[in-house]
Amino acid sequence: MARVLVYYSTQTDTSKLLGQDFGAVLNNTFGEGICKVTNIRDLEGLDVLGEFELVCFFISSYGDGEQCDEGMEFYQTLMSADDGYFDKSLTHFTLFGLGSSLYDLYQGAAKDFYGQLLEKKLDSLGQFGMGDDGLATLTDDYEGWKFDILPQISEYLRIPYQVSEKYKGRYRVLELVEENQLHTHFSTANKPPYHSDKPYVAHIHGLKRLSAVNKDSKTVIHATIDLDSSDSGLHYTTGDHIGIFPSNSDENVDDFLKIFGLYEKKDQHISIIPVDRMSTKCFVPSHTTYRQICKNFLEINACLSRKILRQISELFISSEQTKQQLLELSKDRKTFMDRVVSKHKTLASLLVKFDTDCSMIPFSFLLESLGPLKPRYYSISSSSVKQPQAADITVSTVQSEGDNFEGVFSKNLMNMLDDKDQTFSVPIFLEQTKFRLPFDTTTPIIMICAGVGVAPFRAFIQERTKSTPTKKRQTTNLYLYYGLRNISRDLLYRDEWESYSNDELVVKFAESRPSKGLRKLYVQDLLQKDAGLITDLVCEQKASIYVCGDAKKMNRGVSKTLLEIIKEKKGGIKQADKFLKYQKILGKYQEDVW
Image 1: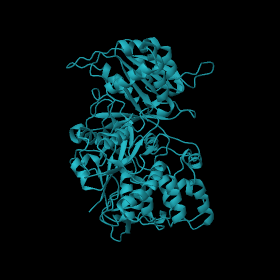
Image 2: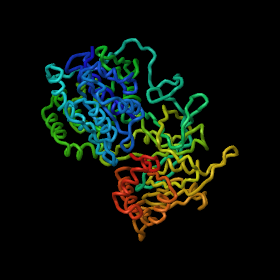
Image 3: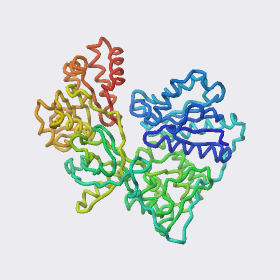
Image 4: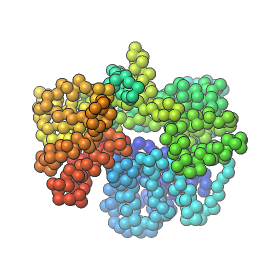
């Protein structure tokens, strides 16, 4: 019988992957069957927790410190329970939080959980772990926390803790003789309801380049995804996200297979099965090939962690020189960040630099270490009122220096853009958000964005300016503060902004890389210039504020500027901070940042 329960609350599956990894480590370290891993949404009452000696929580924050949809019900149940509810049926817990320090309320959801568990008279075993996705150190943070917590769990459960020096895989890779029907991608035979574990295969069309063709500009592509709502049951609300499962490029797949000695048998039929009944089922289909796994299911372009490099060097590399070089790369965080993460080195692009045989690295290890190909999330840039049967997306190509790494889905779109005669399909699902227009259509709205952050605001403006015979919508006071590098090269949806009258929409642009002779401006400068208007809109007319864009580059600057503007009206910085935080609670100050 399991003695440890691992619960995860997730929005994008990251805490699920860490929770499953932690459960597998506990089973491998302390004995098969000692740990059970499950989604927190599947909890059937708090009494279940009392059946275990230890409960480990992996809690993701959504947005600015909010609970994920999956964890909200459990959190509310926990809040409503009496302080002495568990009465020694459960005495200890561990908790690892996942969040981004780019948000003001870093680890807000995990901290709320932690506080409630302490109020229920439970004791924390080990440190409250925190993984920071904003600084790209989440995996390293988790590995450090895990390294510290395992000996403490060993002592608590009274089970000896021994670190194995040999690799013990969770999966067995069987190469098949009989060639049965292959599973090469997500099934088109799926029936509603559709979600991240069972996506809908949708047609994508209407691709067009929005940005100018220029070496100094990112390529931004507009695309439309058919939802076929009558058959799929997929319905979105303006402000929602869409999740899209991309495919790795043939070039990346071939390079990966060659590095690990699998290219010659890329089309070998294989089956992946757990080594024992307690192991987590693998994320790939039951019958497929090495090539199909690497193309459609495995995150071969994943950002590396120090753990993977250490394991590869210690377990599989025979060359002493290569082993020491890999250990040198992974020995401290700064070196690793500077030489690997900042250059977006993938496992294949890193190992190809070393003259060493990597064919000894088991495929099962690659499956466990790299994990499933994750969906890419995009703000829907169309209004569900204007366009209920299809969702528009606005995608900026991702490219980094060094090895010329390109984003997986943006590369898919670039290939589609060059081949307009073909029909393309992508597995998708819809993701509800709290990024919503105010119900009262007379409420002024202030939209602040940079780059492709304009996507959801295109949808907001479409909705506010859309009038139908059945429901007349009054359009009042729409203000868009739009930051971009250069207006002649990077302005998206130019024709649409020009089609609105000033009575419908006021648009103001800030160029960070303007033409010669013009002053560099950011959206914060525009807000400061309009301080009087902003104060009147927010404090007197009860306007709603929306921010969308890169959290690292603009979100904190915008937040600080709004504080400076509002403090004059509210009588000081503390009062302004309290006011804006209350606006967030009311849903009148919302952020959709990454």
